[in-house]
Image 1 (cartoon, rainbow, N blue to C red):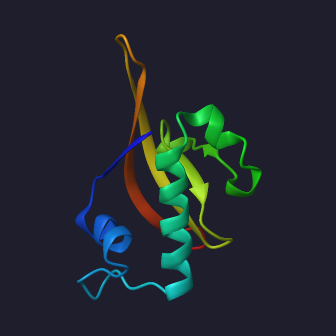
Image 2 (image 1 turned 30 degrees about the vertical axis):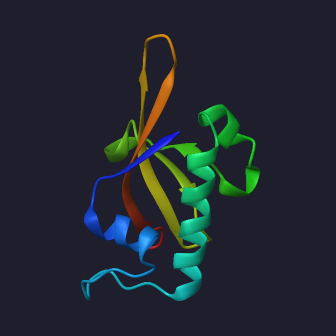
Length: 105
């Protein structure tokens, strides 16, 4: 999949290991797991391959967040993303990372 970050702090967490703003501070273990999940998303070709990793608990959200998928970073946090498929000679899956959200807010 091709991974695109919607918000700057998500890209900073992945590339730098921290976000510049005070609002988006996470424990080092959460950042490490977030990076691992993003790396895995980059290396798999599509959602079917991502669904094989049962520990991620891939799910399609409903209600207010209809059309959004999520995978779990740990018990408390999940990565929310939108998937679009490009038609043509080569099928490309573009994954737009929306948020690193707290399950229990």
